[in-house]
Amino acid sequence: MCKVYNTIGCLTTLENHLNQHNIHDLKSLNNIIEFQNSYLTYRQQIILQHEGLIEKEKTGIQLDLKHLDDLIERRKLNVKEELNKRIEKLRQKLSNLTTYLTTNQFQRFIKILKQWYYKYQIQYNENNYDSRVNKSIKELTDLQQHKNNRYQFIISHFDDAVKQSCKQPLTELDRKKGIIDELSSFIAGAIGEQSVVKELEKLPDDYYLINDFSISFSKPIFNRQEKDYIKSIQIDHILIAPSGIFLIETKNWSTESLNNLSLRSPIQQIKRTSFVLYKLLNNDMINYQLHLDKHHWGDKKIPIRNLVVLTHSKPKEEFQYVKILTLSELLGYVKYFQPAFSNTEIQSITDYLLATNNKKTL
Image 1 (cartoon, helix red, strand yellow):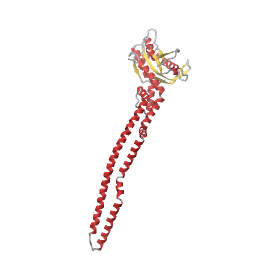
Image 2 (cartoon, rainbow, N blue to C red):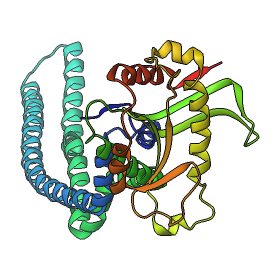
Image 3 (cartoon, rainbow, N blue to C red):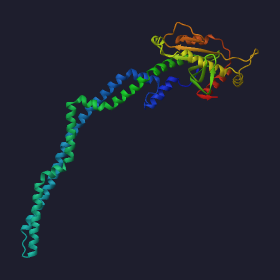
Image 4 (tube, helix red, strand yellow):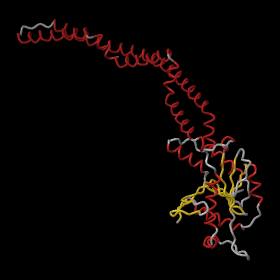
């Protein structure tokens, strides 16, 4: 099977964009496509889940209210019993004091003070009896009122309660969908690039595929024929084969897109890349570094063939220096050319391109 290096470019762009927006649960292109296809299902699942949560909450509140009723009654009885005991104790003290007789003037004065104090305490406790009972259960009755209000809201406005409950997860789901919708062109591109990779993986193991290849230059390379200063190049795929190198640009375009004048032609892009790679690979210094086998006629040239692969339909026209293929034509075209390099040479070319990938050269 063909050896594959690097993640496809569109998928890298997708992953970076999703990470920037704190979306980390979509780990693959299939995950993204599944999310798009299942968005409405996910939304309905969230609503159903929160309907169940609100029903569960309602049942829980019913139990809580019953428990609170019992707790409040017990608290009332305990507090009343405590207050009654306190009042009864004061009355007993008052009664005992009334029967106490003394001729001592000072003790009589103290007795009168104590009688006044006990009567005052009895009256105070009786006058504040209900308020003290109510104060002792206020925290429980407040909680009871809060839960009862919530219960009444649920049974009267069930749908609104569900909307409130699922607002945050639905908002997050819609945010995620909006971000993914913004990436529709990259998703389509990734689908196309992935289909090309899967097709090329069918090739034997003396084929090497480098995805998302790019180089930049501190000093631009001048293409005299096109009068173009090239500061960087990027190509979807480079296939290193026994017959040479295939530069492959993938487009997952519909027939309408093919006829859209606003879309940039991939022809110029692949020709720029081909020009640069030809200059990099076919010179005496690189031939020496690559250890290409000598031919008795002279130094070998590394042929570079330019392909644009369209996953759906392709133009009827032919283009100079660039072959336009559909996905089904790709393998047949690549295998058509006769081998010209040994396995060692293929590996050497691959290693050089891998070392150059994503680098800035002089």
